[in-house]
Image 1 (cartoon, rainbow, N blue to C red):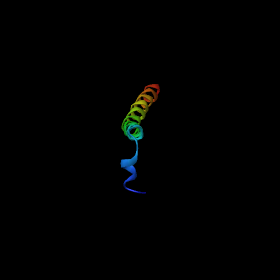
Image 2: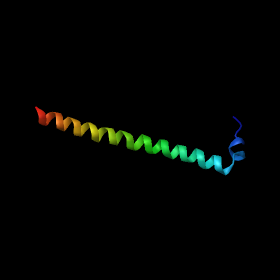
Image 3: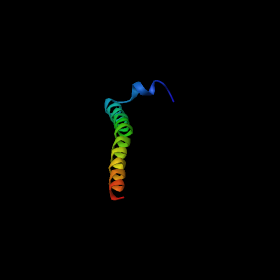
Image 4: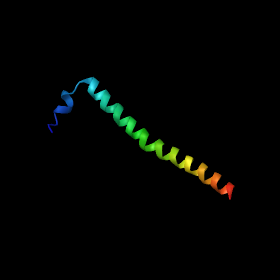
Length: 50
């Protein structure tokens, strides 16, 4: 890939790629937190039923 290609990209393309990067970063951070908290609630409910 040509290193000059990045500078040839339009501002809209750069913003779009930046947005995808931010989305992926948020996904990597918050999805495991949400899954973990949901699993903790399920485990507590299962322990209470015993």
